[in-house]
Length: 305
Image 1: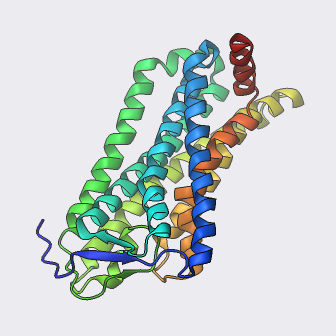
Image 2: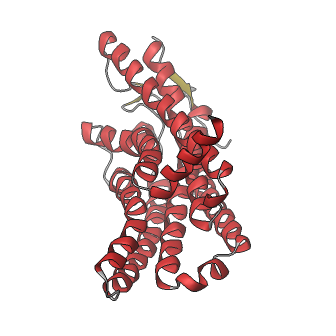
């Protein structure tokens, strides 16, 4: 590392300094994390076990569940550890590693949500050609492309961040390491890192958001051209789960990374939303509102009985 830091570790101040509140928060986030693991693993198993779900849509959904497992596991275990320990520290290297993986998994999810929007557009606009257009080779290529772009984006940001020096300040007013939270602690010029973060946020996340937006404009146009009300309702129902997931992810993630670093409660809420709560909600969104997933669960249960 080119980092010439005097500071060797940071202190994560977390969500509260009160020991009783910390105990309650530990139980709450432990339950949330266990539900996240169970929900996403069960969804992965259902998609894997039921042949009716071996379609591009559920292939991408399985990838999203795997990503949610990774994304929540980057920050939640450390959050739980700090809620129980008196010494709430993390090394500089460990902090930068966490920054990298938060960026990489969050960026991959952003790309994957754009891919899933395109998948829904093809399914609704060209249902007869859907299986031919969204073939397995293309689906695998889109997933690998999502991972590759996100890891490249994370690598660029972390390489620039390695030039930051940390001299005296150690306290991070957050429950995990995220790049905007490190800027107030740096005793060197942060403009290069901030510019890289701003550009990547605009190009990567906002670019994917535009792809999702234009996909849904085309989807809406196609749905409105359907003559029967039943057909319109059925077409829209196939997109409602994905649209809900997009709102949860972008509603909190973009606000967190595009707002100035303040240390206020809103910042913590946005981070909790996309790193802790959204990975737990995604399996519920896609299972409770999806007849095919519920039918697959019933078939698997009948086989087990």
